[in-house]
Image (cartoon, rainbow, N blue to C red; front, side, top):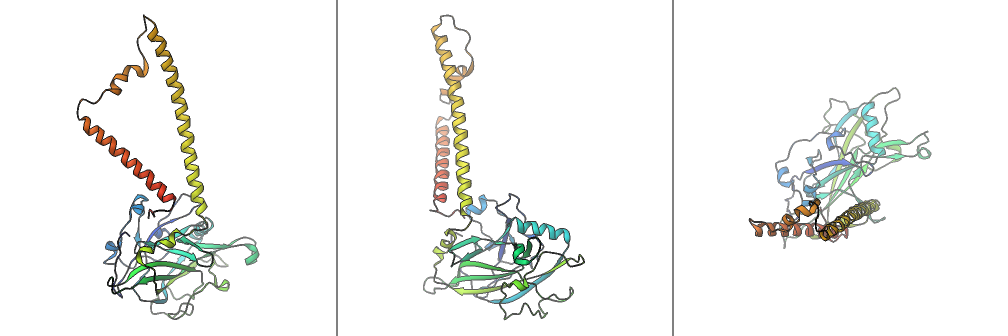
Length: 352
């Protein structure tokens, strides 16, 4: 966002879900294409909070309300959402998503969700659908695929009564967890059910002994998944104006962007050089031919671009000032676009 938003304690804040995409393929999917819980209901302030920056609009991001319920400064322990059963066909598709490293992107108060490590000094937007384990780790003959079905949200905020009223959100982090929850009856109410693996006071952690594998049962039974999440609010000293600084940290896949930019620039330079070479050779031959014809007393009828050179260089008969203004405006827009791209590449500005 370009302007801060103050929230009151206990106020519901919607989390928006965007496309599920991967750097290994160009095919994105919608968030609710995944076998995940449906939205609980559109919040009253969801439309107001659904503000898009210029970068988000240019990228065509389509946001939908996610099924996660968040209230300002209200911590939540492990909260079960729903229980979903998926068959073998959907399982194969989910395994492909994990293999191709698809990531889910969520936003809260216009902040993309981050997976970050202070020890390794990196921050990555979004979280993966799942992960793979090699055979030497699992003891199987091939890679095993696991699903992240629990999300631990950490939201940082800032309060400063002498400057503003309310709470400003300054960070939005997630820690995905893969866990085999204890399942309940399909007709049971999850909010009232007692689930040992998802207690309100327990902290769900990644444990190799309880990872949730993406595979059917021994006799081909469908896989039943229990989704859950937890929320922790932490007060922070980071001012609202500096909350985007962490997104400019280096991430493990930043080199992909650099190589793509260099590749695009080289292609443009090559095509520009080829086009310029062809035009120069063609015009040189035409100019030489016309110069020879000028020396002849009895020249043949003129052909080619020389027939229209008078029209090209003649000023317009109507509204010459309007044409000049339009041309100047186009040059300004082009210059602004180029300078913006250069500043974004140099990380001087943030396009999001």
